[in-house]
Length: 630
Image (cartoon, rainbow, N blue to C red; front, side, top):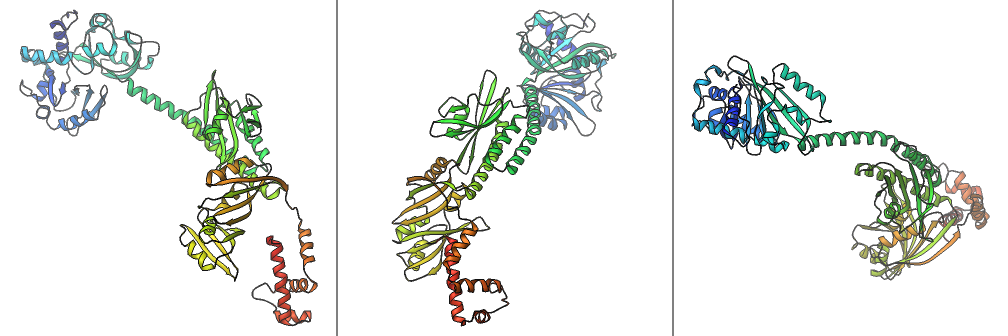
């Protein structure tokens, strides 16, 4: 090959050298823009029988164009792909640019038998050379040509796209081996693969990190192919460069995120399992909190953890339990610039990083009741995915604390009696008392298997029909008349807003509800150890028109079973107690009955009506004692 003129600026010598090199490429090469062939080398002109007027790609390339056009649309600008064909033409390599695409067909495929020996005899005219020169210069990918006959196989031509990709000018590149773009982070395996391909005179495509003139890194997809003359001797190497930085960084970022997620899931899976076991197995709140902190601190990724609770009297968040690196201080102000304070204020996770140390706080809240905050310390970042997982862990902890506090409500005698008034018409008893001009008094609730709570109320001042008529107007409320008497009736209310069940889930026991003229007076009992303020605030948030009347600490009536039996026995006459005992021991309450009332009456030496009178009176006294009536 003749020496080329290395003067920069798109000289005739540059273009001639580049065009000369591509004319000797044995594989058909075409450049296409908007469905028009803007350049075709000699092999392509011969293979597709192209003339000066044959520039429509659909006409020139025939059936293969449909597949190529679809592939161009599917290929991201700045990247390349291999296109496989059906039938004889097996494959081509497509490089996509902003304004078009360059397509190199595999010469080994049937149907592309270019007669390179006749290349010199079929040169196009001056106008065709201009088109070829412009195609090389304006190709959408970086194009280089090197001369292996010179020492170190230097570059003899680069196009404008190459200059834009690398930042190097023509005079700074020509005469140098292409390895000058490589640096300390370039993949040695990819470099070795390119060197081996050149030694073996075969094409190769690799992806490796290169460096621009200003030192910035970019990912380069490099394709190098040998250019042969009519005798099959390699005269040049042509190279195509695509800046694939955006795609490569996206791929690497996806790989990193996948690895991080797998790491988090593998690590946190055991943590969640162990914490769940602690929540299920602990007997009280303190044990639960201590064991949870110990398990979280045992995780290598975390340096320490602590659980704190708001102290309304001091305005501080006091530490209840800790492990590893504990809290910054024994207590944190509720208005401090601290994640624990922010998490309690917003009821959302809060994360900050100071001097490379991360603090992540998660509110412990269940059914709207605040049970404190858990704060984790680590020397690494906690991302959004880990925050979601730790938030779920905090909810599990709060659920466990709620269960312990609810069970404590059943066992403790030390309670705080809270008296409230509520005027929210969302409560069915409030609306019934206002619209039916009556009084309702809460008697008892029954939790059914479908999680619905049925509450019994005695109603005075209105008939059963009047109550039923008002209840029919209430959405989602079912009112059933249980007993109707002259002066009062007993009704069962279900559906609507369930106050009693909702309070029970939050560790509060409903003692009394008395409603009159659209106002309910409610008495609750909450364990002294519970967060009384949080429960009351939850009621205030849920029900409009809630006012706190009083707080009172007191001891529940701690009557034992023996004391209850003794009190009931004292209330019964001998005849009533005898009738009750004989009925129970004689199987009178079983079905079918093994004995009759007549037989039991005879055993007591009384008439049957007298026996039934004693039995019913005893049953009434037993029910009053059990259900707490005076």
